[in-house]
Image: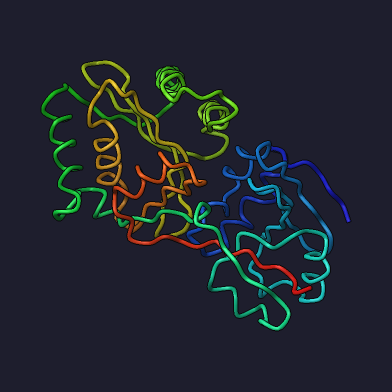
Length: 284
């Protein structure tokens, strides 16, 4: 067995492997793994197959496969699972591979991804989203606004937004995703990320950064904005959803990690799906 700390040098090994896994789960992305490698102490494990070994936010160890579970030798999989607390994140569609008499299944709410239809995020339809429409209208009528691609010449403005966002959180940098987001901005081209930056009254106001997760789903790894511009988040989500290529049907806004403020914010957009990420462990 060979174990290496996950680094950018593993991009060529992992990028296409993960892209071939047809899932909406946000972790199945090399940029996601790379940017949060320190938070989870990720290692690349090679032993007749390639796995990612990590530590969950609750301290448990896990293995993440880099191919679908059905394509892994069952004996090898069982052997490898014996070295950690569980296999994670496992799509529910894979559970048929794991006989219930030999495996146990669980999931946590804080790890569920929030999935929305692009159409919903474009227009905020219906009475349940009327407040989002009102905030969007307030923003567009209150500020001179423009949206442009988040290209290299706008990165410094995005960093300015990020730093102000971090100050407004009132948290230390190690308690937020400030570090991963800053790194993502600096390496967006190398990581094949794309997004938009948004200006209000000629000031940098917000940005979005993400990537294609599968043929139908775009994942937003980061969405940051300045509180001084009321309605900015409603504007950036709506605008970005409107300009996405029509093949994308869904936006993944990732998990809330049991953060109450994040949970309230993401739930307020009325997700179309709360995507469970299963933990699969050996029966003892």
